Length: 159
Image (cartoon, rainbow, N blue to C red; front, side, top):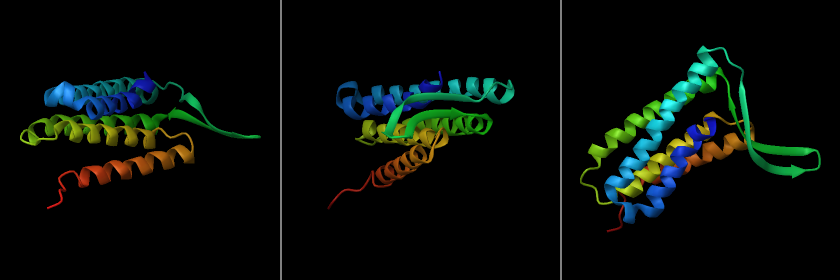
């Protein structure tokens, strides 16, 4: 469940970004918004288990990034009370932004690309929030910067 909270927006971004022409505008909007809404609902479950339920801190390793002698850096999700609160905030606001963007972008010709950027931004925010080490925190921070750059420059066209 905890991996799904983080990786559903990434999967939706990949589907909308790579298959946007085939699934169409509505398909991209439904997939990205649906994935973020499901992620927000799962975040509420995680919040009730970890923060409200007094459950233990969750630590889920995804894979090992770097191994060099005794030095090892893994890519893992760390979910404690503060992280559970931030998961609810990030996914909740992102779900609202996704749903609002369906109407806001009604006349834009590049809806799938925009929705892919939004979902990618959500994924990197979740990477930032659930970071288990500084390398993963840096990855999330840089990803948020990249997604922000893409969203800010979305309407830029050369004359």
